[in-house]
Length: 100
Image (cartoon, rainbow, N blue to C red; front, top):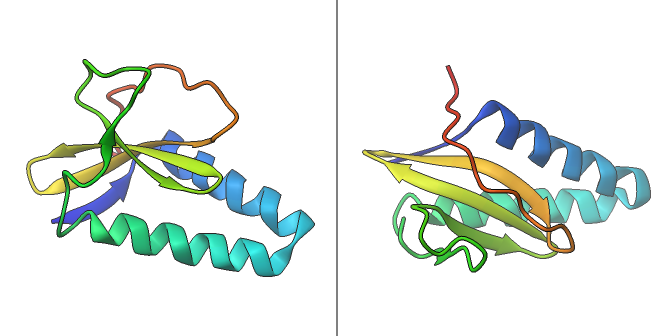
């Protein structure tokens, strides 16, 4: 099992890290490590994330790494991280975009 980011998911994650870095470099490092650890856990337990409360009928799940939410979908042996949103943001419906 492998974790991959869609292009938009990667951009959102990098923007989050960059934003935190501008205000508190140590917090940015800690957030990135916590996010990597949480996403790596999905390789062993892909169903461990909860269904997205705003979209319970969609095949997406989320992992929360405060204050961010990572939305993902399992496809075969790949976990696709499709979005990374701040918890205060209202999420738009996740899209099926994949890294090419």
